[in-house]
Amino acid sequence: MKRLKPIKYSLLYKGAFIDLCAIGILLNFLSLEQPFFMTLSYYTILSNLACLIYMTFLFIREWRGLQISQNHIRLKGGFTVMIFLTFVIYHFLLRPVIIEYGTDYEVFQLSDILVHYLAPLMVFFDFLFFTQHKQLKRFDPFWWLLIPLIYWVYTLIYALLGGRFVIGEDVSRVPYFFLSFEDWGFFGVLLWVFVIMILYLILGYGLIGIDHLMHQLKIRKQRN
Image 1 (tube, helix red, strand yellow):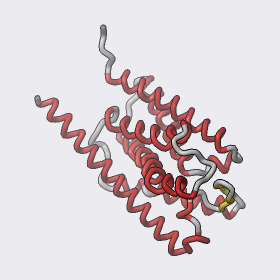
Image 2 (cartoon, rainbow, N blue to C red; image 1 turned 45 degrees about the vertical axis):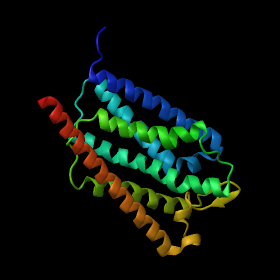
Image 3 (cartoon, rainbow, N blue to C red; image 1 turned 90 degrees about the vertical axis):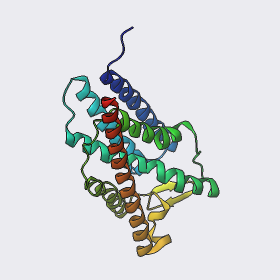
Image 4 (cartoon, helix red, strand yellow; image 1 turned 180 degrees about the vertical axis):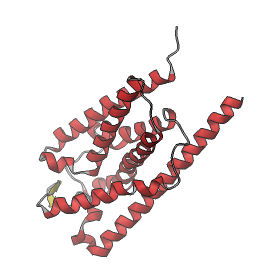
């Protein structure tokens, strides 16, 4: 039996991710039963959608035998941190609040697992095992900070234009409780944003550290 080439493993993996991520996004649109732009405006959905589009782009390039450049990999690193933040914020911050206060959103249902756990972990492992390492640059995490900052600005504009979010029986102008000026005040929200920026940098430099470690392990394997 012929062994699959690494590129084939990568294509199979990316193909599985594309299918599961698309299903997760679709199930969330169906289960939340909210207006299209309301559901689309959650960071979770946008991060999943961004990774779905970019992984599809990489899948097509690999399928056609085209080169994956350093800039492609650097952008992939940014999307990896983007969606991994979805996992971290949801699991450690949002999920406990949902369970404690109770809403009509069911944690650990299939749609929940796909977008908050499976998709972030699959993107991370794709970066780990199917990406050329030592391509990220030292200050890339600071460029990646533009992603959450742009999202925050988007939520402000969305609210100013009359956009709303339905959370259980409550209607809010913001998608997440820590972005509410009514509850936290201007400086309180700025503090939350600052904390998330720091967390984003920690995740970014953590990814660079893991990236360098994988590169060293590959060199040692080649020497042996």
